[in-house]
Amino acid sequence: MKKNVSDTLQALHNGDILTLSRLISYAENNDSYVDKVLAKVSYQSDKARVIGITGSPGAGKSTLVDKLAVVLSQKGEKVAVLAVDPSSPFTGGAILGDRIRMVRATENKDIFLRSMASRGALGGLAHAVLKAVRLLHAAGFNVVLVETVGVGQAEVDIVRCADTCLVVLVPGMGDSVQAIKAGILEIADIFVVNKSDREGADSLERDLIMLLGLVEYDEKDWRVPIVKTIASEGEGVSKLVEKISLHQAWLLKSEFARVRKTRVIQDAILQFASQALLEKLVEKKNKKIQKLVQLCIDKKTDPISAAKDLLK
Amino acid sequence: MKKNVSDTLQALHNGDILTLSRLISYAENNDSYVDKVLAKVSYQSDKARVIGITGSPGAGKSTLVDKLAVVLSQKGEKVAVLAVDPSSPFTGGAILGDRIRMVRATENKDIFLRSMASRGALGGLAHAVLKAVRLLHAAGFNVVLVETVGVGQAEVDIVRCADTCLVVLVPGMGDSVQAIKAGILEIADIFVVNKSDREGADSLERDLIMLLGLVEYDEKDWRVPIVKTIASEGEGVSKLVEKISLHQAWLLKSEFARVRKTRVIQDAILQFASQALLEKLVEKKNKKIQKLVQLCIDKKTDPISAAKDLLK
Image 1 (cartoon, chains in turn green, blue):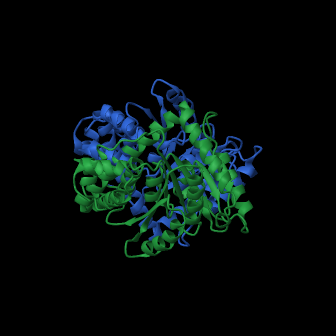
Image 2 (cartoon, each protein chain N blue to C red; image 1 turned 90 degrees about the vertical axis):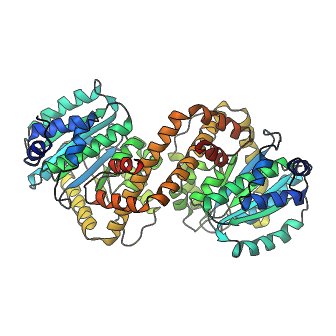
């Protein structure tokens, strides 16, 4: 690929897969060339959609995402899948997983699939993913499925930026714990109970209904549905696609959604900013922080005074 | 009061109530004199304890705290109560509430009671409260009960710095919602179901047991108990005092508690620091933030790029 921004842009906008792939690699490597390209990309933002899929390992997300991608593709969407694994280094499981799934993906040549794993800082991966999404949109993939393993903060950071967020749970794994702990309840637009032929599916659904019942909704707010699927057999996938469409129609027409979106994005920006500021602080002043913690434990200062002291 | 640090210190350490009261007022007014005094106060930190009490308005916290204070005082503790109302300005309900409760408090002259309400920034109040706690300890009050109205972030910030945190709920008010939303579940050391003679008490208890059942405990971790009380009749208060003693004994002997305490305090310091940094950022760069949010909505940038842009 020639490093010429306008040539690269044209190739990208023409949907050239080689250019796209290399640009995503640049994003992973934090190469600033990709930022030059991103500064100039264009696409119809109201047609470009991101669907985030998260859930604990073993929930069958990959299978579900593959089936989703195929159904969406059959409906005429140009679909790309980003499979993100923050816990795997490149030399680990991700490559293997990628190979297996590449075989799957070749069944449908219209679907672009790419796996991204941890390289350096976790925040770095999240950023690479967000850039990759924009590159995919620019290359004409209007629907990007971002699948993350796990339900930790890193995954939440990645999928909270999606237009629609699916949280995939399976029976018998104590998933509702995870749902509460990682704040997943707040980011889920749709809950999926996968492997719903397993024992415990009904009880998991009941738990979710109860949890959702505890949330106070504004009447104009989106009501989070629960969809039962057996992804390996394709069961429930069209129902899921239907709920996704409903959610995305709601996003487009609702003033409430617009206001919420604005708040979600502002929160995300500020949270990333404060994370970056804190990381610098912890790196630069770790010894001081440890001292201040001890002073607080000994009740010789208090956490707010300590924070002020830290920022001096 | 003479503004002479060593005289003030001596009066404070002698337990002079007038000096103590004025110093708390200084803390409220963000007068730096109090910091000079605090820099030199001394007390036995292992004997100085803070019990935080939070819960929604109408949960009967004031009554419960009064009864708790009396029982603890009868057991020989020197007890102080700080009643914090972040939502009331000084001219509002707080003064009235204070008067009513002052009548109550005079029943027992050994108990120091002070109400603190919002004056200026919310973070300012939290800081004033943390300083007041240290002043009370220095004046010989080994047990400080910090009672906050509401279960918002400000209240959580205040009580998370307590050694033992009670969350007070009442039947029939959809309290478990609040518990999840404000992250109260994570800070509660003891749940109190007050007004437990009301309809719905058993169902609230069941909800709590279920919620607590969803949390993954380390076997060395404290198991959060649920205590039923009818504070107005003093019922369940001795049981509650017993659970508080058990928790505080656990805090002193458990290595696990020490490690957790260190983490809680470090988190608190870093959170207050990042809050302060963010407030500055929002104040200084509000227009830029709004612009960046719009760019994200239009998918012309992403939240992490926007955050980096903001910090430039």
